[in-house]
Length: 349
Image (cartoon, rainbow, N blue to C red; front, side, top):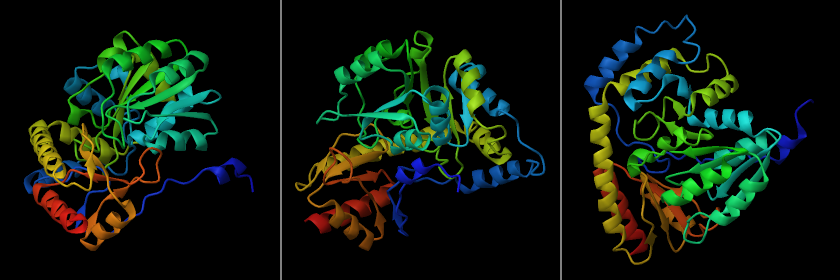
């Protein structure tokens, strides 16, 4: 067969799907659309011509996003999920060069580098999950390619120092495309797109899956300088976003009050969870700037199994560097968080 033998060495993306009443394992929004908005959305979707190809480059959605973000529609690229954009950015700037990131971090960066046969460099975070700034700067000065940095970070949920990010942007400006993955930025109320004006090699990667609550739709976008977007767009396959996806994205942008309401509830629940977790002596709850918590527990495997027995899904992270004994737990609805805290007390009490 003509399959590339290198693929044998690439581990597939792994996620163990479980059937649980309470799902806290994928950092999703816990909120579905209210019934009246679901009905309005379904009416909107009736107007999508399923026999016709969608817009070539999501022109209408780019226009709506540009108004929402006060950004140039020519300075963004939209795709069917930010994972597809990660692949496109590796193709645009990493092939034949390097993909640089930290670890632990979002696994799709390394997955795409390995699938595409690009040289991958992963620098471990410091013990406190801060940036290994000096090591990164050294790499940036002697290499070239694409540099991925999630901020807020995943799976550690922390924010990196603004001064460090700017220093890295300065070091990367000659030979790197620097991608700041802002999938969780609404939960930290941060926005690094302001850097793009002075550092046109920066891309801010975002998603509709988290604060917008559209994980099942698959929509992502990236903000960048107009000239960079023109080139990156070439690496995204034509007609890769369906008319249904585009219509749903536009619909959600018209209902910002609901998004803000859900976001504030998640932030309130995050604070309440953190206060309650801090009272359980057998665990360490790390501060979170995202919609999930990283917890260090006595036995991650045992807690994962115990939670399944309570029909609660959480995510093990103990296979990752620096995260021995760790699990990751999404912030859910108030009643879901109460059930999780109750189960946690029983299992670790």
